[in-house]
Image 1: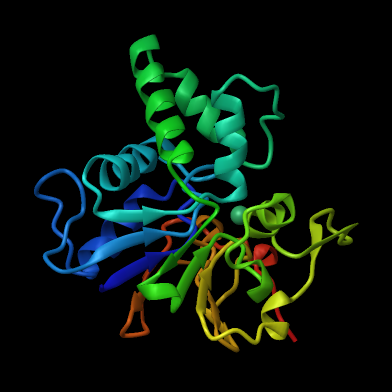
Image 2: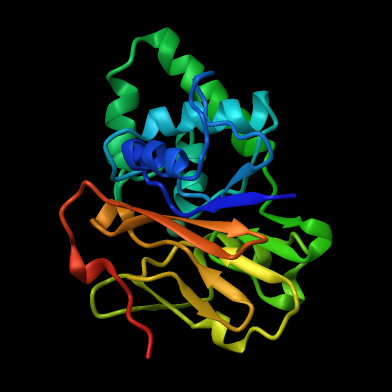
Length: 245
Ligand SMILES: [Mn+2]
């Protein structure tokens, strides 16, 4: 199976469209399709960027209706899901942009987006083992000993990463560099932490190159291991990118 795994889109529909075209997908049918490849999404489809709802619609059609893509949820997806099922959540950290798009719709269109996203999220697993377990996609990555498990600890890890519970000086949650300790044989492809360049450490690769912060949208081609990118249309917010020592 040949895959193109795409990092955190965060509502950057235009860059998503450009990237899939660069990868050779055709939008003739309204969604990006390829003769012998499938797309895969590492989560965080929405929030902060300009067209979150268009991203939801296309990913829903690809994953749920056409069975032509894989999707695992990110922390932003989890929060949007809780909002859409009627839980009380704070509309901050980017969710406010998705909610503003949603509230601007008429009731029928709201219902349609709500149903689509709930169905997409309900049908998703926390992470996905592909190619007979040789490849794992998980939003924030996964520890080797968590592969195969779906308990609460694993859910927290795949959505938020290896968080310590402490805060960084800038108020963001402190995250351990789990990839540095990873010794597994499965290749882990993930996003969540914006980096200037795709970061390969051991058998892991972070492909969140911060498109919504003015970086690039990145695809990782499997099994070729090639990187394909498009630049962001958004001005650079340099402090949002994590540097690793
Ligand atoms: Mn995330």
